[in-house]
Image 1 (cartoon, rainbow, N blue to C red):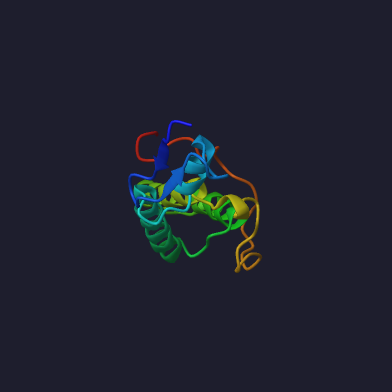
Image 2 (cartoon, rainbow, N blue to C red; image 1 turned 60 degrees about the vertical axis):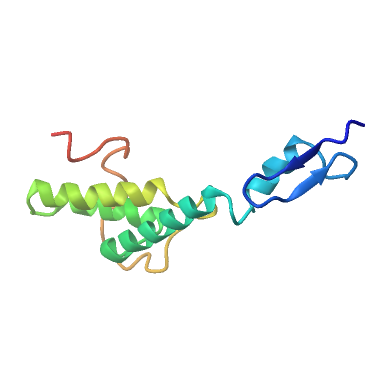
Length: 129
């Protein structure tokens, strides 16, 4: 035993070599829950921005968002206005929590919008014509 200690550089939590939790995987696992790790701020920022977009778009479930995109593409509105909304929908689709993928949101079924997605969501409406 060489007395090495694994220590989180953000919160100082230490895992001495002789503890059952010692090893690189335990530090990786700790990063997922460390309150002082920079990822917590990034996760909080994403959640805040996502909540703001949900407030503007009005839906948050994956199925609802895909229906909303298809409906938005059919509306008689200026292309620039459609692009802004579709980009917001794509941002919401890109940040659907893993446990909510494919699930319907609370207001699902309230719209008679066509189903399906008019695009694969891999492009930015502002830059493509």
